[in-house]
Length: 283
Ligand code: NAP
Image (tube, rainbow, N blue to C red):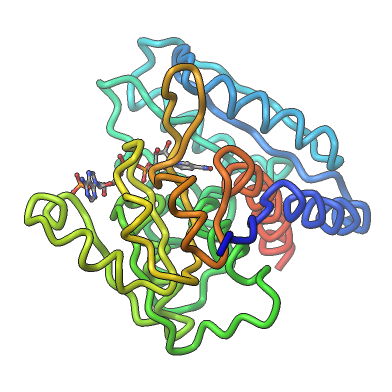
């Protein structure tokens, strides 16, 4: 058996076409501001992608840079002024922030209806209630990939999410739960206890978001499973995920490639969130 590839690029292209059409129907061009404190090479790819996608979709985009030494108070002032600016529809606080700034504290100052990455506690909390309009981009991308599978019935399926970060694993587990997927979440302690293979082997849906190349052995993958690999690792100059792709592909029913799986969808979802934020601001 050889798994079908879940083509995130193609899915993102279709989604972006729909978002572009929706943006053309809005009264004004939505405006997105990304706030970056200091320089960080790790952010550059994401920033370039934000700008390029914004331009292609008819979104006004601005990068607001603050000095590396900017304080929490200075950053909060900038956020407040963007919150109060009616011309700004979406705000991104670019991660990572310098060590002297508490990212969790900062996220609380974003207006929830301008928080296009859904990092504000209110937006996170809305997921618990199944009411979220603005969703964490990567977790939502995984759901988008699952829903793209023709004839898929999520109700009652058994899933294993590996990784419990606040931006990916935890919200994803809740999104799955909201669809009545029986969901197990594995994390560092599962790995340490040595029971990770046990949980992975049972999963009809396996979603891995850790950042460790080869963590998930191909022969752990259940026959016919849906495998979504969120991980991004650079190994000998090549981008790979967390799952041993070649072996897993022989057993899975569907699998995402890395690159070309979850990644391309993330920015499309960011733009979908911006449109959602724009609409919430008109209410
Ligand atoms: P993160 O915050 O570092 O979280 C990693 C998670 O993996 C943590 O919950 C950690 O548990 C868990 N973990 C670590 N070692 C483990 C092990 N041996 N067994 C089981 N779980 C283990 O990372 P993240 O931000 O969620 O990102 C995860 C990966 O996805 C990274 O490679 C990142 O680059 C990638 N990513 C991709 C996209 C995309 O668009 N494609 C977007 C975001 C992230 P503890 O916290 O308990 O240590």
